[in-house]
Image (cartoon, rainbow, N blue to C red; front, top):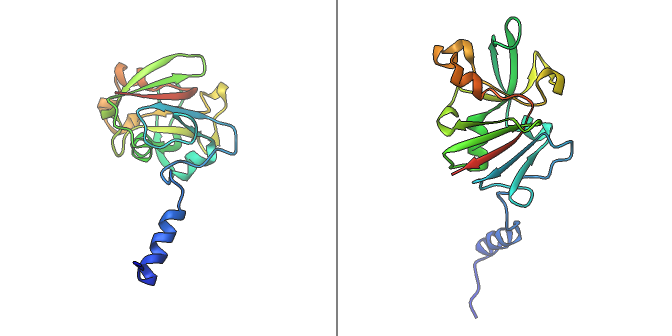
Length: 169
């Protein structure tokens, strides 16, 4: 009879006891703010990744201080970088179709999701954003950091009241 050495048997037992879907996301406990579908590797629902505020915060907040064409003066936005969200979900799509609560939709090329680029903002000036204040989620680019972010194309991708993203191949 074949026997594994004790340390090897312990490692094998731990590996077999791990969940089959170790890459899956936890289930949201609060109100779902964002649903991501399409070409994603990590999910927590049938073909989707559902996020509440706490789950988005756990990705680590990124801050952008910038002016926008929709608000007065400089604002501080906090959220998860689009780059980080894509990495965390294993998205390898060409395009993100971002849709708002009222079904307004825009296409964001995956090339926009760079380090130091746009964030999925959930706070403005330290406060969560209500639907009335363009929340609960808003794609915000660092408009003041680069003239390329101050164009009609980029402004059109800055969707607010965001609640859905589909990763399209």
